[in-house]
Image (tube, rainbow, N blue to C red; front, side, top):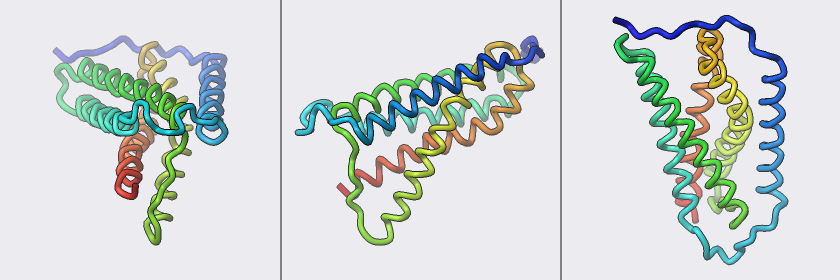
Amino acid sequence: MPETLPVNEAKTPPALIAGVLAVSVVAAAFLFWLVYWHAPSDVAGTHLLFLPALNALLNGLSALALVVGFIAIKGSKAGKIAAHRAAMFTAFLFSTLFLVAYITNHALHGDMKFLGQGGIRPVYFALLISHIVLSIFALPMILITFFLSLSGRFPAHKKLARWTFPIWLYVSVTGVVVYAMLAAYR
């Protein structure tokens, strides 16, 4: 028997969306301040040097969980909702852990400079800029998509998830690529 969930067709409260957007703007502003204006507390770079690699690992695991969740919901009928939900919660967990480690890394070490020269520089910065811009949009989209699912608004969830999934996946994958490029040109 196929697994189904009850559908809630209620409208999403505008105050909730405004709240999610406000939290997202504050988070983005905090990260912008942290990366570009905050003086790192470990200038010598002697503490928690594994954080950039951990961030790349968490981004990679988030991307993997996203793909598993996508395949689960597009795959067979039996158990697809439970598998999808478990994978998406796993991706959310990895992304949340990434955010904590990212904030810690930037508070300690500040921004890493890209040392590559020549034709690779514009490739790196195009990738980095697209990663940053889309990550700003990803946070509220992820939170609203989760809310829609958890509140049983599945048609709205599916409609927004069509946009959230590729953006979240792109941000997760490009996070790994940015780390690899920084590490390769260190």
